[in-house]
Image (cartoon, rainbow, N blue to C red; front, top):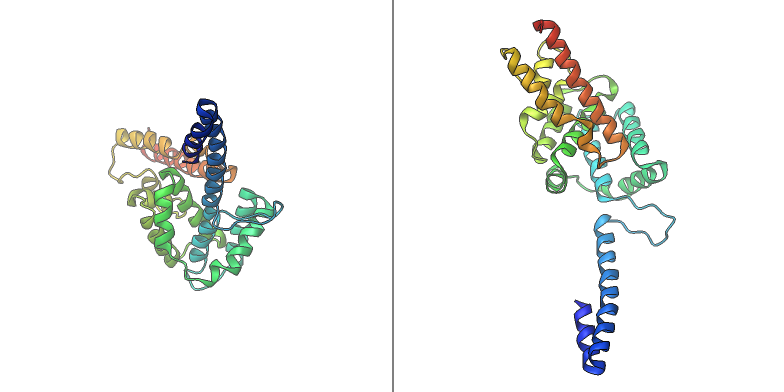
Length: 246
């Protein structure tokens, strides 16, 4: 640490006053170096001018995962592309979103995108509830054209596995995008044979898991996605209340 080196040098020449002054100057230098380190960690792309927007690792990695889902069924659907662009503009603003897409097209898109690498990175650095929201976002992209294909489900399932999501949580989110007799049960993560007390207990657990307050640390657009998941849980519970009569 620079602060201790300067403190020792200061003491050698000016005793206690010199040590004190050296420690203060060293602390300033240490803080400057720490700030530079944190800045470089925040983004893999730095900018030489203050008015230029530099996309962060998370945004580029999220866009990379989105591109895998868009291409999963062998066609690039315009409605899915529009959904992603609108999502990024709402989350980060038009200028930053444009910068992210530009870097992605110029650099990232030309390389082979590794879902395993990105999924592992998200698993290490993101809270579990935030990773749930990423999977919900990927399903929303697939559903932008009004249909989630089997190949898109397969791709998202693979990504979810790399991110360390439990299968029952993946199936719960997946069920939010498919209408069938078992959807409400899958959303609440219970079997069709579940008793009323078991359904009520599952509902309480899902409310805790998907409550929008869990994503207060993220941008507003992600919280809106959490609200959508939360609403699906409530709708599933109300449906079972009507079917079961409780």
